[in-house]
Length: 110
Image (cartoon, rainbow, N blue to C red; front, top):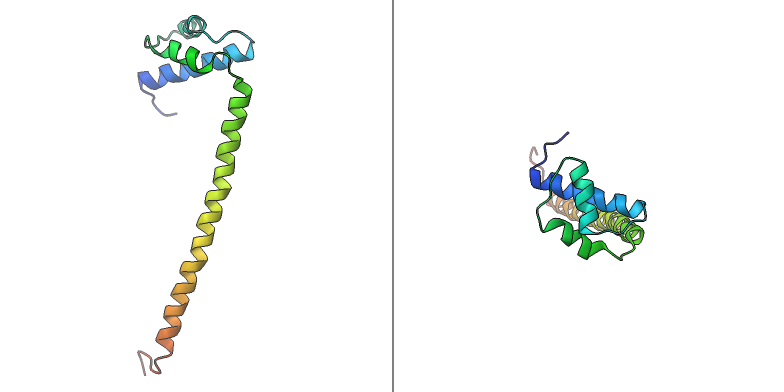
């Protein structure tokens, strides 16, 4: 398991707290986030809980999660298709160069 910095732990704690509040149907507020994080024995930077409240309160968290998951899943096949299309072109160029060498009428060991 990787070692996380204090800032990374605090950020993950705030994320999980917001998800727990959403799952329980509770308001995602700075106060509620801080309560959950404190119960876990952690402390957030003063700006972090209000930032999560401002960003997430009133938003459809399930929709945000689905959009994030579908966006990254759609990007992977598109990237693979782009990478896959470039490889045959390179191979074709290499084959053409090899053919040009063969057409000179002599070989290295003739």
